[in-house]
Image (tube, rainbow over all chains, first blue to last red; front, side, top):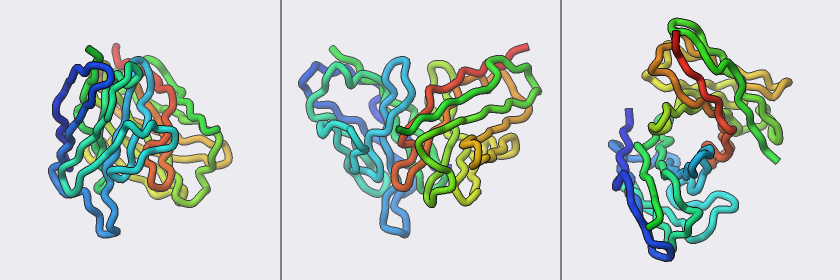
Length: 111
Length: 119
């Protein structure tokens, strides 16, 4: 099984400041088709998860451009350029090259 | 507009079989590339992917739960059913279904349904 490891597990950010979450996979997520199957989700308090980023860096429909994804192989990063109050919640990465596995989650709070 | 809604029992006893139904609208599970997946989340814990069924009836299961899970679809009713056998208190969780559409895995999720396993 592929293990997904997120760091940090929690972070507290002042509104307007940037935030960054790391996700590392135990195996490369680069498929033979040339695509890398890494996704990012946000679960806001009391809500269902929502897709933010697919295939490492493609923003899903309606996702603000302050969210960006990067990385390759086994190392990936989600960045929020300027955190807003509505960004609080738990962020999860997920791999999709061999079935699907989520990371442990990173809780974002506002200072 | 795509919507998904999970339904099923809120309480099951240990050793019983859980049957959950995902009823969706706004897309068809007969469209090439489309799938519906199930994910669960124990209270206060992380998400865990369980199973996925594609438009062509291809089925995928979590290796750790494969022996206990069955996923089926009824395209005419716009429903996907997940059964999990031999339920245990550790299976207490909110169970979600979500649509897998092309490149966007888990693009939209249902509201989830909390299932408690207790005698």
